[in-house]
Length: 268
Length: 304
Picture 1 (cartoon, rainbow over the protein chains, first blue to last red):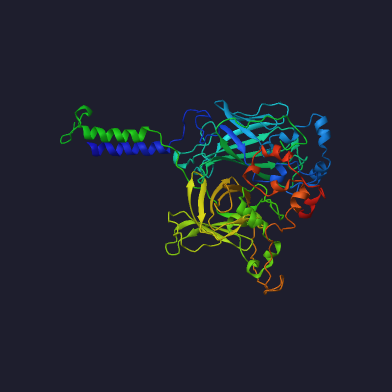
Picture 2 (picture 1 turned 45 degrees about the vertical axis):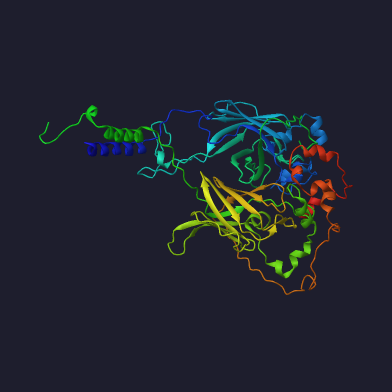
């Protein structure tokens, strides 16, 4: 008897593996591959003199500016920015994580990850599974669409070479072809123009900011790190996408939290 | 019911049979997690690396200790012109950071079985290569020779290649003489975000650093990239630097050490690095520190 039952079970098991993944919708929080929440402090090992100081006007040697971008950067006037309610231009989404400071990351709701910064007292919201509201005016932090990255489906084609889709047009992926997500990807658009550096190096309102958040434990001290790779695409001012990096170390609480107001002439 | 065949009711099965069936049922019903897989890192990668630490006396952002600072202050730019240094390669962690860092990653095959045993990194400038073994082999003994690119073994953490390098020769952290000892080990994380490759180096050097030093660079996938050969010829002793001269600064005698700090308006102490300088609160402290009068506000132009 047992020998007759086993093949049936194996057949059912094999078939179940090939069935499309139709798991009930889960919240972003429930399926988060990593824990990004908590307090983090900048560790400024990259571009130190551009971040711990306000660089000189015209010092944009590490930014692939085009002619128009250079023209705008060369016209930077911090006093004018401070006086004209533009002091926050260097705290926009594209460059906020370059500003030395502390982060507080937590779930605002099951599908919205919130990041508060003490530098410039800014808030960013990472929206999972939602689409950008139409007719929203641009803001300093723009609209950030988030997803867990790295779990992109492997290429699965039907007999005619096309992707396999279900009746609603969703890509059908068999479980054995699915990879595990392991990072946070955030794409931010609908931003007001801002600065990539404190010294007025510009990005436009058409810029697209892609960010990749990786968290890991470092083997020597066992500190937990957050590494952020930022790709800014802005044909209006850049000849190619600018890639920047920022690193944060996890800290146990809010000690050292030091809220500042936006300043056009200060590093943070 | 056909003759000769017997049926066994579930209630009449013995406990062993029931257990086997139950386990099989579990295998079917319990949702299996997605299979983890590696990411293809091989190919040609075009650098989007922005050099820093181009000046003598620029140790900014490096958690140097006193010994490291003393060694760095003794470094003289003419050391690069000594015959023994002209064709000296950088280890990969610095070579990918400070030089023409076009990168090629290929699969490393076992010579005999032709089975993959890891990945090979090839960098344009001076053509250093690093093999990262992912086949589980152990590191050599502590007494094994140290090499420019050391010995590396790695593993996959989901989609990230993580590898550890030791057996490194003494080398530099920057192109302007900040030292890295042969006791250093480097943990490297390689992550591919679409067509962007990001490499994080975490350098642990008990001789010259007070804490691990983290830094990161990125490349963009460029299948049409051409990495030119890098022939290097050593000129005879005495051609550039007088024969027998060993360019260096004695302790406290480096008369160009403060140029970087002065020209960029940075307190000298801050420009010389240290773990304290890496934190946001150090900005406030810098405001209380002495800064030499600036001689220029356009110093950066010479590096453009």
